[in-house]
Amino acid sequence: MERTCKLFTDVVQGCDTALLFPMRSPKIYASVHPADIKLQAFTFCVWIKVTEALEKTIVISYGTKRNPYEIQLYLNQESLVLVVGGDSNKISAENALQTGKWSHVCGTWNSDDGKTTLWVNGENKAANYGLAQGHVIPDKGIFQLGQEKNGCCVGGGFDESLSFSGKITGFNLWDKVLSDEDILNTTANADCSIRGNDNGHAITVNSERYLSMIQDYFQPALEAMELEDTWFQQDGATAHTARVTMNCLRQMFPGRLISLRGDVNWPARSPDLAPCDFFLWGYLKSKVYINRPNTLEDLRYNIEAEIGRIPVDMLVRVHENFRKRMQQCVDSEGRHLPDTLFKTM
Image 1 (cartoon, one colour):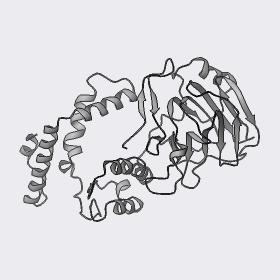
Image 2 (image 1 turned 120 degrees about the vertical axis):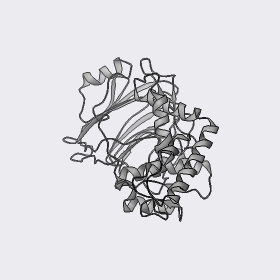
Image 3 (image 1 turned 45 degrees about the vertical axis):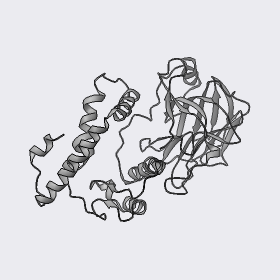
Image 4 (image 1 turned 135 degrees about the vertical axis):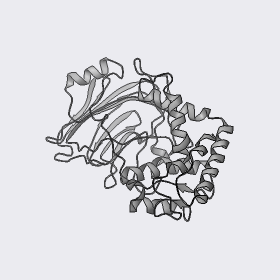
């Protein structure tokens, strides 16, 4: 993405970093793909510091293709609104927070009786029963921080007027309703040490998730670069070559798709011909662990920093090596490449 939310150090005491949303923009947001768990109850807590709130300013949004509005927390000026299952099911806390100040917000919901609550800075500001009673929050959705995805179109569906501006940190989700005491503890600790139980599961990249990565991350970033006649290359993993994925890629790269069953058929099991495989991953691994990062945030920062530090002349040599590998593959009629070629970096 041309502009993206950034990690920022002006945060709540005890929290290492915050996501910075410097302005309202359809290109500034964060996406989280949770594990495939259906929810019959939930609690979420988050620290927010809003710069400016309009009639509807999205803080958190969770949705699926069938219903993009399963869970929403948004601001209406200085009031908070929590939506469950659709816009007809919502509660609001009037005049609950102030712009320019950190606020700790928690929301709960239970399908059995539809009880829904909104907490701000340790105070129960709103509660109601019968909200989306009997409903089940479906799996295979996406959390958006700072935006809502209305599911209308490939790589888009974002409305600038709904964008969040400010800072967000300490977002956690539980698959149950926390007790009042537990919610008070998350506020009283004033840090990010308390973790939800729905954010640490392993995730398999299937065709739906891969397609979402393309539409939500890759395509906006590519459009921001304003490149022309770009070619796309991928290996033959099942998620990559599923019909829905290939249809999307053919539309994005007409006549320029290098892939199994693509416009140019990519040979199977050929990492020696892919710069990310023969160069980038190994190079990054040799760099990003030098200072022994302790958290995912530290590791992510190291990866981004080391990518930015790759010398241009090294990238030129990688490209030259790539061309040599491709020519060698042609000359050997697709047989294994000689080991000596790997030493020309």
